[in-house]
Image (tube, rainbow, N blue to C red):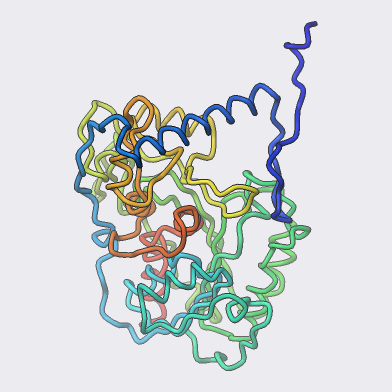
Length: 396
């Protein structure tokens, strides 16, 4: 066997400064391939910025999907919500559109807190150290909140990571449980990646989430797909929904799908979800489908503007003639920076639309920070569907 046939893994030359970064095991050939791609990208970007690069064939397209249409704004229900692990505001926006009064948001990332405050100056937003739920006394909210909601960090459970669960210092489910037991809302919503509902974490879910809350709440676990609510993306999430009274729990039913997958069999009463090209207003190329799951994550030794999380996702984007390896801050910047094969380069506002955020919901921070907030968020239309189903029970 020749040396070329042996997979020899070599470490990255980029120093990792993040304590929770988990570097990939790559061969020397694969690392060199990535370095070449990075060099080519830098050179193309510099040429675009200097005006010496090639000219794009793509005009500035007008998106066809308005995510607000997926969540028609409802009148105030008189119900009050409290948000933990608020991130870029997916659940917060969904609950607001469903008629809830927003009491406060807690988010430890400063730039995500800036996003919430910039979009809703009237909201009470606690960010940074003030937003670290581990130091919050929740008793002032006791009996003042109808629904407590939040999505604790998913990295301890995601298949994209090491799935360390309770051994991962980012595991915040115990803090979510502590908040629920202290605030004692009429209902709660906890959200996470679908992997949390797998057999691997069955014992964790029972011991850390269900058992501590079961004495006061009737809890249901439900898995929902974003595209079934009009979001043009493959995204699967698990929700834990609990009610303090058995009467409310018995009256609640998970939200029913409002849309069917593009290209799928039409179903009575359901609308077709747009493919990503249609949603963004791109020309018809004879092929369209849901976007692959947008990459989520903000940790690592380098700041990435790629939203692609797998080789298969890369192939699907290529077939769609869409470039997701380097997302630009604006449409104008994306138009100037011509992608390989002249694929359509995405801009941050368009990635927001693919995640279900209205275009007027602006994200704060550097481009990679904005993309991290989008990729980590609950699609607002999904939050809206859950919020509406709960409101129909609590507002009776």
